[in-house]
Image 1 (cartoon, each protein chain N blue to C red):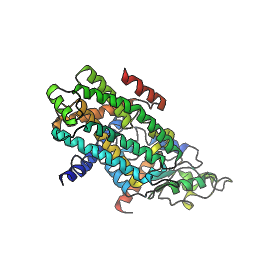
Image 2: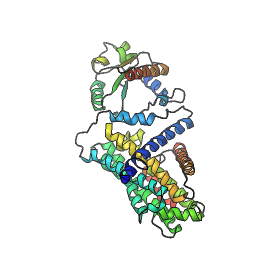
Image 3: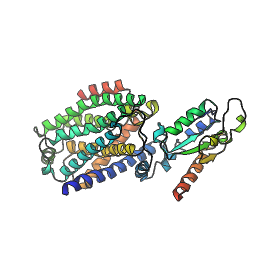
Image 4: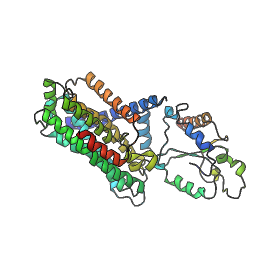
Length: 125
Length: 290
């Protein structure tokens, strides 16, 4: 989910579904409706307009639903910190399970992060 | 007891669900290989279903009680068809009179369940999906019935699946005649529409209407819908095999024929763009009737 991001992370996320990286190997698919989602991949620096909408979408997701902050903006608001249109950081709004820093993070980084999270969950949190 | 076993375990629910989910995996894997990807491991669909069972069920505001009821309606009818087809294949003499018509009716019910569920979920995108599904049913039911009539005429007016099978065993498969081949091609397209695969997947178009009819479903009902879909993926090719390729139905040949049909529909799915609903309607009403 993009929250006022510059689209750079989103393009890297699209890369995950290309033949080169192919996350369907691990059974990960891009899904249209939040109701089917197990994991929200959030990018961007949380501007004030998008925060209430993001909260609403998170409430609509079927729990348990993981939240992943993808990119330095989502992790720590990067250089947009203290900017006039930026609200609270992501981890003050939603329970974040995983931080993937990078501007943008490489697809390899996203895959390895998510797989680490998955293996941690399999071990029983 | 035997009946219960038939419906719940062997040709019925458990068996057809497992086969259907495996077929779903073949679908994903072949699609992935066609796109030069690796594709998921074989147990992926099973994992998905079990995961969905553990997830929260959300009932949207303003949804009717049919929202939770309709998935089971679809599942039950799909299981009924699977169980009966399986039984007829094992012993053709067990079929009852005019069971072909019963099966034709039951095969529509999963789609109708989808429409009921979608239109009671109080979501605008789902209602768009439901209306598309409805038009699609109108589009493919007529050619499918014509196809079945062709088969019925070829087997001298027999409305029993058992008789059709016996006819084919003695006289050769229905596909090896001019009208049989034409009818088979039509049936293939109808099956594509019935399974909701491209080029006829308008009702669940992921890019335009976000999963369409299934958009509000989560958890158990979604799992039930996915199971229904899997069972349909098993039932429809088997139904076609019974109608057209019923000469030799020993397990080995049956599996080979099923796999060939399955890969064929996956290839059609992967090499065709999605049609608009009006194009789909035109296509399904004109082409098969030539």
